Length: 332
Ligand code: AMP
Ligand code: TRP
Image 1 (cartoon, rainbow, N blue to C red):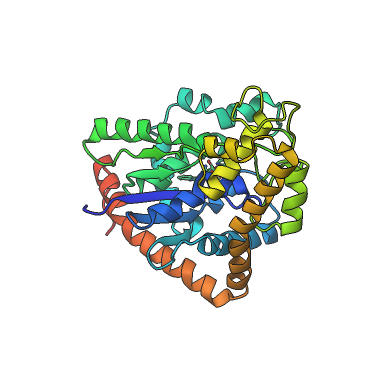
Image 2 (image 1 turned 90 degrees about the vertical axis):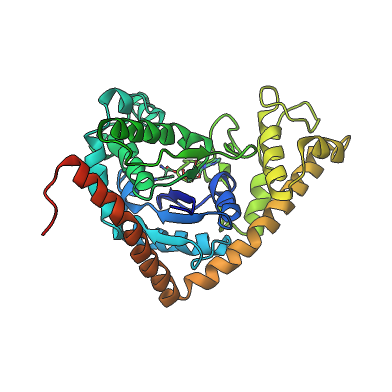
């Protein structure tokens, strides 16, 4: 295998946020020149929570349009929908038999749900990281670009690959997580202690990729700050301002020192206006392009159909190797 591979995905459970853009998609765009990249809409992960069927279908297509509008080239990259490539589910079952209950019990995403006392937790929520490992290992991926919150899942994926390779000999490439230095965990604007999330109960805390300039300006202006009145990066004392600095830095490429200097003695009002302006300009072309692409249903169908075909071709040799190693009788 000469070409290095990347796999990443986002589940279509809500509208994409500035957090998922800065933490993941922005890096996907940068990596597409150097790697063979598979960027997936992980709809099978989405059904671990209950969705209205029409909404799930709409969100999956919108997410596809937003991937392309963000700058992912559908010819150079393999962009597709997870449920269209059944090899993910097949490998997931197999890897479940090589995942330990103790490991799954330690996954913070699952533990958080349990500790919040959420009722009726289904088995899919528990085995979610196994399906994610299957996504990654199926393609012999080298690198997995994700935000901070997914690092633990990628580490579990590595452990599963190492365990399988130990029993059966070299089968899977052991992947590395790729987490950005700035912006790996964008916080909520209204609660800078918690992650900006597409499923947040408070939509004022999240900026969505499809938000209008007016909505963005309002949300940034209302963002929680502090009484220090200095634009300095200090996540302990000034979590809200530090979060806005991270957003501003990701949108403009400016370092924290440069930002502090730029707003020396200017007050939070001026800083917030500049942050809002930068985010508006960052998202404007993506929103406009998404709307254009979304209107062309035939183009979307073509992208996900050819994506799934190419993905399945890459997945098949791995699955073949795995079932041979396990001792399944080859298909006739
Ligand atoms: P999600 O939107 O939760 O499905 O996550 C999609 C991708 O975006 C994953 O790689 C996450 O790690 C990343 N991500 C989601 N929210 C944030 C955030 N607030 N800050 C940074 N990265 C994020
Ligand atoms: N679990 C990831 C999230 O919640 C989405 C995901 C599924 C993923 N499979 C993946 C990310 C494989 C990277 C690689 O964001």
